[in-house]
Image 1 (cartoon, one colour):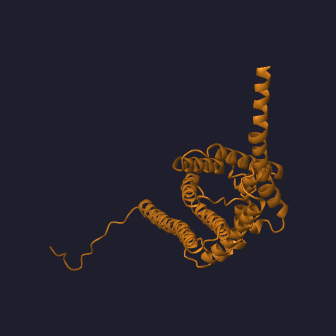
Image 2 (tube, rainbow, N blue to C red):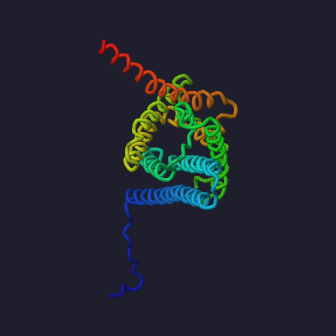
Length: 296
């Protein structure tokens, strides 16, 4: 039935509370869409880095017979992959600062990916110092690996600055490279102890589980890294890797380089030395002494 001419039909007005609620819902959905899109982009960047470094490793193995070059490139690419993914992880952490469990979950799965794809590489100068202290490699090879790791750290920073300059995400901008967010939130002596303990715990655990099958060992390492980041991440970042620390926070150590040197170089190195002294020298010596006294 048609309305009579001249008669106006009134449309019922929505209550103000409903209008406000619908506006807030629209803004929430828009924010969730933006954050979800940026999250997918950051995860995609990490996947692309892993795939690119994997392809590079395959090409080097196929076209290079020199063991010298293979070792150098393996350490360079491993450190490059680790540092690039860790830098993009910082971007991902900024998207959900109120949800640390999400970041810890990503750290766990990233650690699994690194454990599966970087087999045979150390990607940590402190790990090289451990092998040198245990006489598992010649000194020249240790210096070669450390040089490759520091070079990979620098290249990863340059590469990520280029990726961020593309602006494919709202959190990607070139100014990130000059933005300093110092990971040290406690006094320098306490930060030294935190990094030393993290290095001691991690490398001690890895050394004692070397005989465990790979598919179980990488889960153990990933869980341990996630726990250490959860425990010490708010204090020093729980990095215990000089190459990674330099890649992540180079802009923070221009004026206070001794902070980087003490907290992220000397502290994890001392943790390695304490681990070697305890498990390789002191505890075996103590065991032998106890056995001698029992025999007497």
